[in-house]
Amino acid sequence: MTNRIEIGKKIASARVEMGLNQSDLAQRARTHRTTISEIENGHFTGSHGIFERVVDVVGLQFNVEPKKHNFPKWEDIEALFNDE
Image (tube, rainbow, N blue to C red; front, side, top):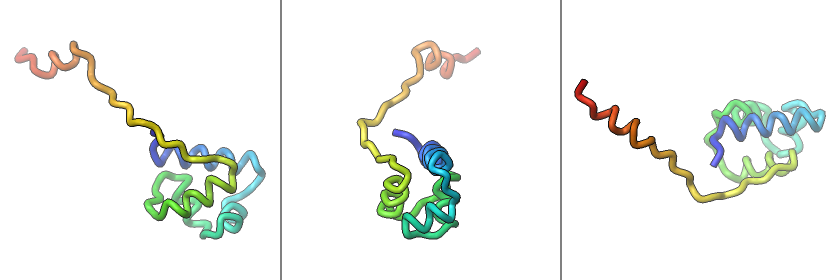
């Protein structure tokens, strides 16, 4: 799953492609320009409903996927416990 920073970058890119500034997007999504700024900078911790309105305006959608785990390689684990 992408993180808030990646989501914000995708929203900002889509907004720019549409020729919108943050105020335009805020008006269409029925929120404040500062909220758009927080979303695009990965700092937004507000409601999912606001996120849904914003991504809808710029033609994006959320996808829920199983979490991917990044386990270290065996060699890396051994190095962690090496006494040398």
